[in-house]
Length: 588
Image (cartoon, rainbow, N blue to C red; front, side):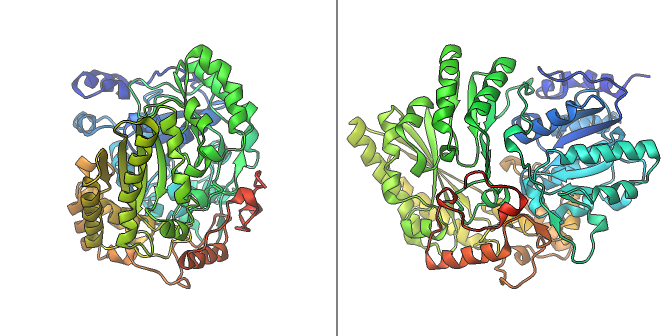
């Protein structure tokens, strides 16, 4: 009988970018077929998006280093292939061996942001796997979730057997080990999950007990943690076709809106020598012409100058570019500008006035914005600036400050380069109150106010030459806020939205706002319930998650925000957030 994989291959000439679905990428490990257990990593977005995700590559590499385990991958297929799979009775298959997802021991979904939730169901549907954990018997694999969205797992909890809270290194392997042992000893799925619940960072929704706390998993020895020095090279151009070099985890800035900055504490750095070694090995094993320094604020890495010294001979000899994204204005300098020669640099002032930057603890002064002049001196003609609209206490004066910053940069460029320019790209997201931040209790501004603020800023920027403006959709921002702060009731809403046609919600051209509005209405759930302000004393759906950062610390940071008082950078001294109890913060 012809295999599913051969039948799939016969369909590929009829779909867009068939190389997305062939597998066989450079550096794919060759595993024996008789391993104890198999794990399939599912990324609920297109191949070229998922192949750019470092976290998935790390966990994939970690499992495949074990001779007795195998990790494979699956990405969300474009709808043209999905239709052909359905027509021909072919289930969703892994790339490496063409194995149906339902035949794996563990299937793990990486949830990077909230608008991916319907794609979980899209992939399960194509795989022939029931959506809800309660409907899956012993014949189905353990379905697991992880990623940044796990900070509040309740909106999708009913779909999963277990959720990894925090960092997945070591945890995914431990769950797979239990699945293998359970298969060998004849344990039921419930018994496997009962044992998995004892692993730090593993949440089992079906076995949640009253008063239970789930503690986030943290990689204690980040210096020697897994890094894929032979990363997979995609078959089609990915969003980020380059070596991604993770310098450290966590962030010392403490911006009060930033979930990642709090969720990935404590701050742990990898030595410059180790980073250089990894970067060189990865370039040599892939042929990439660019190394991108990866962290929440690259310029704050204490070993940056040493790392550049270590890499300089290699990158010059091999003609490799160093990319330094995620820069803070206060840490930007001429050396960085010279080493990272690109067409443009990206900065995130976030707010247009000093007052509002103090509220959000974005420790960037008006004087430090002039640091962008160092990029102009180094030959840059383009700058990308990121801001947010709808931050707590924001006024129209703060919005006007965004246009004023653009005017100031044009003047600065003229003074330095004595010519017209530069090209300034302004991108504005709508503030979304996220769990595990000091602003987790705040309201999101109304839909009408989003549109008013966007139109007001658009008008202001039209008067500034050389500025282009882009913004996030109001509808998707409202939905993201609702999903971010949701509870278990949203599981049925997500399922209904998918049934009504919602999928690939992060893609503007495919976002189906009406399907979501109808799903909320039909399930008797109000979106406004999740975007409203919360009392500090009010229980929150994610309160049972211990991220290390104490609730008391978040409350105090919120109080300081309304006083307009900033908190020092963690590198200047410990502020006592509490994350040290989960692992040593290596910068203090």
